[in-house]
Image (cartoon, rainbow, N blue to C red; front, side, top):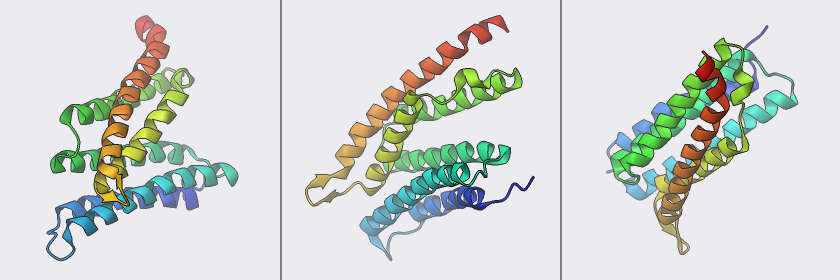
Length: 189
């Protein structure tokens, strides 16, 4: 079966954007300024988030879902979110405990899903609405925090701070939900 298609190409594009986003924040800002850098970074993240939605939509619409795409898509998402959070941590725009909560949950649930798949019980920890809301809060908070400016009276940094704390709460809640769903199998094995 062919594992290369437009949805997978979009996912690979998102993976390729990660080092570009990191480089953007670690290049000298003399030639573009912090405001321009932050604007470009926020829009790059938004573009990556849109490709995340688009690749899934196209894969389902065109019936081009593959096992490789199902593996690569969440990995690309987690790498993008983790890279952005580490940039924000370095810039002092997000608290370290929020980053630890979010990244720790991603590692824990990814490992749980992998283990559940090996015992044939992956459906027990299928994506739930809590996980979707957590992702939506993260994907909204991060570009606001990358931008971190007031524009037309809208304080994007403040909005990002509120959203990242909502994301942290949803992160803990969704992790507890998934662990609770898996607990009977964890206890039995």
